[in-house]
Image (tube, rainbow, N blue to C red; front, top):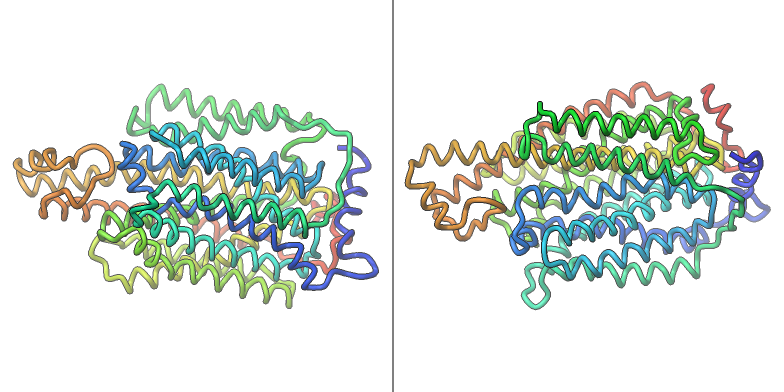
Length: 534
């Protein structure tokens, strides 16, 4: 890395809040308005399809594997490109990059709405994920470039609140669109486009950041190898146990290939002048532990947003709209905890207690949700979801916050994207693996239920179109429908139960993160060498 990088980065970081006239709250909010809108668009694209997916996959003729990959494809491309966006943010105009990310998102969304088969939709979701990866990574990075760490907790809370609003608004909006006959599910992809265009215009007017001009060489080789390693790993997780056995030569080739590609990535990064992920960052214990915790939190976070739609629609026969309404307790918990924790952290400068409490609550929430069945009383489910939401809200933004507090301004982009990368990686692996687990568990529960009904049940189910992909519950005879609802209810419960140990691991990891009080200005950010010693 060029020797002038730290000074350049520091100069950019000080522009807005170290001069003679620090930015007021109003000025900061004006500058962040477009950024928050862009963040809203990014989260909306992920959540708006959640309640529409059962209908989308049914219309396009896909099965559980396609259902999982519509979600995983976006997570995969988001995960693989997050480090690249983060590194580019340390080298080029952050404002231009976030605008490019919005344009990529718009292009992917428009074509996704025209999809004619699951393969085309999955490909478009990959493009969407690239744009969303830029929006999520750059939101944290630009926030860090403008605001001192001590004040950052407050504004990170706003990001968390936007996350919560988009998370609850997305499924609700997607459900309404899907249930509206003259619109249909394709408008789930179109509806985010106007928001993205507005965000582009607002960013152009309000976001004022100096451009960093440096002669650099982007580490494209590193970007390729990390993308290839993650992609191969996710493909293995998705198809293992379905297309081939877990213990098979295909597993050996894919796992071995992923490890080999990962090793090549590490080799490339150790020699690159401008690495995608500077390996020296991991000499800092806080960054290493926060990355590990984010990996485990990602599993819990995405499991909660992906599988609830299947539970409410397939196990409880709710409409897409009601599926969104019924998840409000989880989003309410996330909204409250992210906002309150951000404000308290800003006042006290202390954040570790929130991380530990969040890990404990997320573990408890997932464990309780592991008891789900198709006939579980809703008020029980609501309490369990609220507990999970409270835990996730305390952890997500604050893991990034404690990392940003440990690095020099020139490394803010790379360090922020590292934590976001591991969170997305955990989500992608979790959705793939848990989707495969759910498919197998549902199949087993259906077989058990059908065996109890007798041989005539299988014939009746075949005539009703109940075999194969996502079932249309309204076409199934009453006894078979009960079997299917029970199978999906129990299967989703198993998914949450298997997610709980990952939240527990995140909780255990946060216990070992050393708390360093948040600094009160960006220019005093520690250097990498200083941070290593902490």
